[in-house]
Length: 491
Image 1 (cartoon, rainbow, N blue to C red):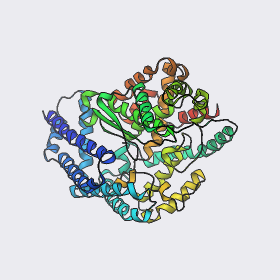
Image 2 (image 1 turned 180 degrees about the vertical axis):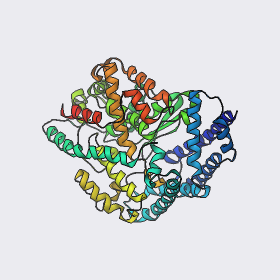
Image 3 (image 1 turned 30 degrees about the vertical axis):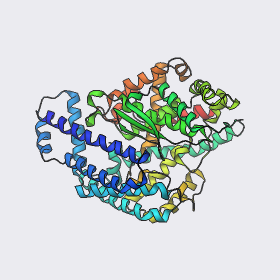
Image 4 (image 1 turned 90 degrees about the horizontal axis):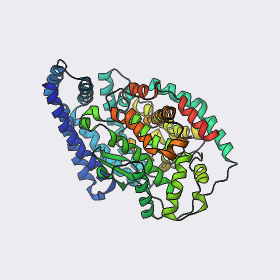
């Protein structure tokens, strides 16, 4: 059967991608600086091999024949996802794929030293090359898919989502979010919050993080925790690689980062084993992936009932102190204070960081903004959304993220889409299981069982819209997110 041939072909592709994922993790965590150029070339060659696998001349015939074979519904969806992966790969020539991989690896590696040095001038020519190649790829995808250039890139991360829909959702957020930020800040001015008293030794922070990962159900037989400049979850479902970064003056940064990445990891580990080596067995979208990490970090880990359970664990690892009291932790971990850094942003102001990046990257790809004007535009939008300035501080402005260094344009909206998805899932979950005040205290595994049943096991067998509707009873809406924020921060 041609469908069987397709399965075998895509399983071989999965093995190549597995190697690329582990090499990418090593590049970010273990690789000595001197290995950068050789690793970039190796990953570039691997990218071409993966691309060639998807451009195999036999695929068109197999797809045509498989379409007439008697397939089960899950196999039909699997065929559709393989066809989508094939379609995406055939849109770009191999030399462009290799050029993008090389430029991205070089830009990302340089960024690791140029960002701390606040060296925008040194970064600009590398970024201009990445942007030029990304525009070329967007143009090719746009012509083939009949989408705008930006939407053709967005489709890679959030299939079915369009900038018009994002404008509606983000426009709604923009209508009430600034007022909510101000209202919450005013309310919190009268609260007394005790800061955590450090230092917090790195080895104890790691031990705490590992303990919480185990508490959250992470399978250490199929994954590990390491350190990188920018925290991420990588690897493959059978071998998930998490990273974090430690600051001995601040235990919250690493801990909440670990919890966030554990959400990603639990999703990966919860994908159906029978489909993991095929496109249909992968995560539905980046927004759905982010919904799991944000569910863990925001919906669970900052809930008072969760923090009440965390309190004695903190005392166990660092010694008791008044700041570890559950009520103080709840106030501390829900402080709203707009800042420059996206990854350190609080739950309420975080969407503003995403909307800023969305508008910038869309204009960059559509040719409405040139790279050399990026710092100025960033400062303008930062002042518009959060009343802050990054003028002359590119390290904490447009150089702060890793995403654009390798051409990952279209990714940023997934973060706020994930927050919307997560709030909607949490609302539906509590309607079925009861309020988190009781569930997190008495039956934490029930939360994971719900996620496994409603989200994880479906992988890409359903569209994002169908997945959310099936899980929550409604299509995506910003309303549950607003209700969540108002209830948590205004009472």
